[in-house]
Length: 220
Image 1 (cartoon, one colour):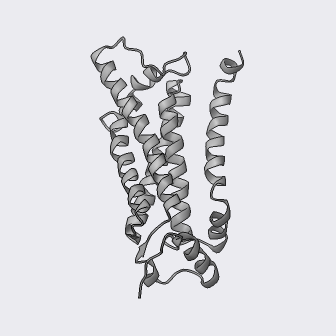
Image 2 (cartoon, rainbow, N blue to C red):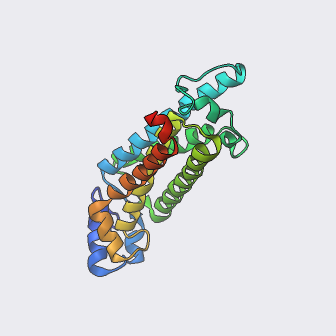
Image 3 (cartoon, helix red, strand yellow):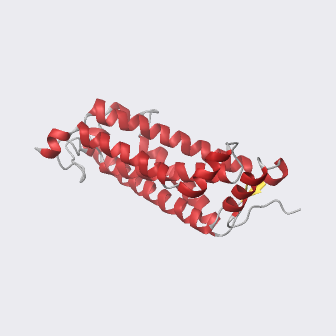
């Protein structure tokens, strides 16, 4: 019996899950998402990798010359330099973008594989979901630090935040709809029709926080 979920696996599996309840274990052995999903991972991974690469290069330049001003330091609020000089910029003992260079590269590889119609076992998808959950959690911590501790905003960091948020919600949507992650029927139905709502609301909330944090500066 072929247990794979094909290019439209998330939709078909989600329909079966809504009709028949949780998928049997045998139907969860391997799963493949469609080319559109793979393209999403490829593009968001590329956006995050670009941001991490630029920040890494600027960090090296800053280490060579403490007076170096990154190109994205535009004013007292949008100041990548202040972010790079902060303790939070090396949360794990090394520059944060170095973690992004590896993580976003992996995401791009998975996206490319899906464009080639590859399938992966359940544990692989759940591992990806856990990785994106860590990523969005880390980004949330960095957002708080940026807005309320460092008091500066980095545009390249913001690009990485947006890319991570999008990939997290769409990966979560896939694992739920494909029956790879246990979830109630209403959540499967919601993700089946309105996956885009979650990242839009998430990014919108962050945008509102940024707007209100420096309201006097933006409107002054």
